[in-house]
Length: 195
Image (cartoon, rainbow, N blue to C red; front, side, top):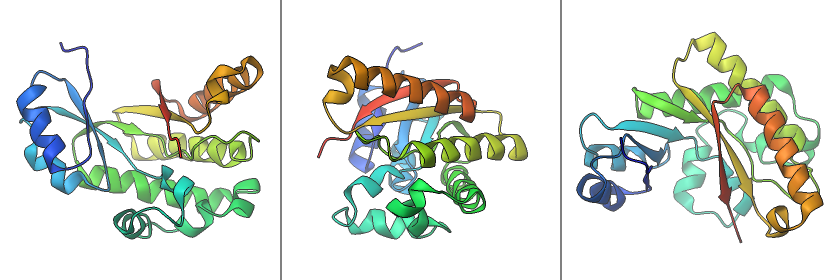
């Protein structure tokens, strides 16, 4: 088994996976671009679908294709709203998560892994509430749909001090563990979303 997981964002990346990483057990792709990537992948390669909801960090400057993608899910406008993030409605979040994760499975019916929808962490912790409810909703969806694949929790950092400063780092680790436990995720992935 290969010890790498390639990430493919477009058809060219899919071709590179097929030619350079054909031994990879699984490839991570975005539900936003899955239709372009999947045809390029080797047969039998596992798929890790990411729902691509972290683009809210760059709103309104995010590209039009992402906007078109995210607007197909009920509640998208609430999830990106800073006021809503402070007091998220469970019903709205559960509907959004259900639609997003179903969208992942529609894009790749045999997705072995799915990323838990999460927003990038911010220094003041103001997204902790929404991320907790998103994690809870993913666990609810998994149980309801009897999804047998793995859920992966993305921990998306936006500032260097999230990793460099001990107090900040410890808070991120504590929050990540809480969200992992809430979502019943089998693993976590740490990523930087630097501006």
